[in-house]
Image (cartoon, rainbow, N blue to C red; front, side, top):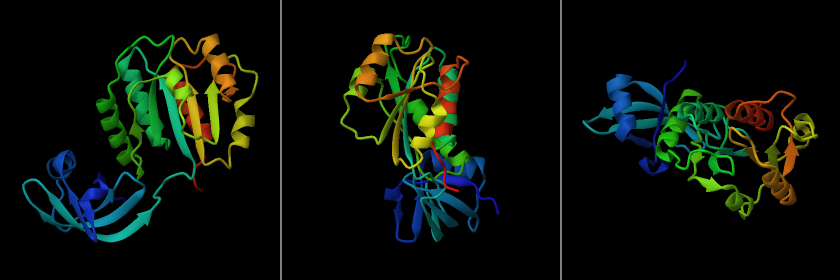
Length: 239
């Protein structure tokens, strides 16, 4: 049986009872027309999913009883963070957020680089898109869309990734070789440039910070395409 997915943060889950509020409640009642007695799947955005029977519907809150719990539900062992230059065309970046969420990223960092044109990030909108994509793809972890970050701040971050990858069209190292070495990694940071790519100075600086500079092939890919290809290669799912 295929169940519809809904989101409820962990603070709204206590014992064997789940509460669904806000926009998710409106979606449950007004769009999906769920009724008391219906069975659905609720995810907490932190990796746990629950099979839930709706027991009570009020004007603002839905209450359900947990029938079964699923830990690390439909999530990869590898935690992938994607840092990507924001794009001039908002709809293309919306598409990127949706697809990399479906593919399993845990963190999305919008980047300001030398060749980035926009100067503002629509983080709230992108977080909502990630929430929708999480439910659509039957994931249980809600990716965090971070605030707009400069490349310099990211490079100097103290977050410890087991592998750091910079995708660049002029690299001589094949992405498949790096992907094979990364199969046992638990945390990976992937960098994708904006429309104009990373500058030579940026690539040099990141190489000095121990980023592996790799090529995604002979063709020059759009930013959103490169992000999808890279995440697909390096986010090894459970089998």
